[in-house]
Amino acid sequence: MPVEFLGIAATNDGSETTPRSGAAFDKDYTLRLARAHEDHGWDRVLFAYGSGSPDPAPAAAYIAARTERLQLLLAHRPNVSYPTFAAKTFATLDQISDGRLTVHFITGGNDHEQGREGDTLTKDERYTRTREYIGIVKKIWTTREAFDHEGEHYRFHDFVSDVFPVQQPRPGVSFGGSSSAAYAAGGAEADIYCLWGEPLAETAAQIEKVKAAAREAGRTDVPRIQVAFRPIIAPTEELAWEKAHRTVGAIKQRREAGLVRHRRGGAPENAGSQRLIAIAEAGERYDRALWTPTAAATGGAGNSNALVGTPETVAQALLDYYDLGVDILSARGYDLLGDAIDFGRHVIPIVREEVAKRDAARAAGTGPLTAVGE
Image 1 (spheres, rainbow, N blue to C red):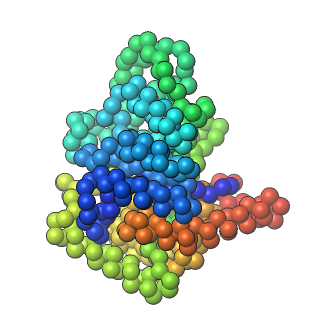
Image 2: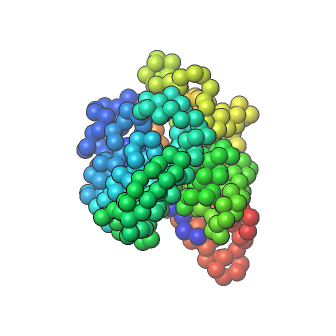
Image 3: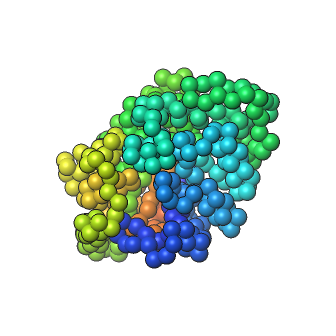
């Protein structure tokens, strides 16, 4: 199966290790970073969402108009707009990008962060809303006749859009989470299911839960699986590990100095972050190259487990996940621009070459099956 690489479409050069040098939306940097991904073998970039961050939709439109091949993964929280409005926004962006859009729907795993924009629903209620929201958006994308909707969270009458996506029948839907409610929602609705990087055994178990949820929802297909990491690479293993320890030191220093916004209320509320913390508490190193102190230093904040080593080591670690059935590999360094270029130059070609060999062997009937459950 083909393998794809997802990078980050940050709107400034700040990260967990360094403060940003300019405005929150730095147009020049945003474009430089996107073009670095396009020029170095990446397939798509994520436009992330934060309550106080620049709006990712116009940022994605800005990049779409200035790139040719790079695909766009747009994060969206259902609480911030009505689904009729969102569906038109997404369709318009798909038109601007000539069919390069995928939408990543975020249910929201932190009550305080959701409350910043007026969302007061409980976590379970948010998942119910997200499933309803995605269903409405899909219907708007694919329906040419006006329709009514009477649901638990949304009600409208006689709606039909006048703008439709380039992609037929519709753009892809991406979704993530590590709770039972997340598996149920994503298993039912997602084309791509996103996981944070965990050890191979835990990742395999999560993939099986996603597949089971898809079957439970009556699907005959299953979502593609995406897994996210923070690669730390260097020419030698020794240099890579030195770089890894410097990275954790910088993360801790910024947090201790109060330069990084901390989560209110102590422990994280979302299952994904809770899992990352538990894995970090159980050990620092797993499998070929997975390293957990970066996750521990951030309190399990988002995509935070590292893969450490030479480009060859990190590439082989990524191939281990590919062999589980993961075909979208998400990677983001701490020097966003420099690391995107280095990863594209030194890691992506190795992975693509090895995947081509595996696919050729399977086609010839001489290679092993790779996807979990096959």
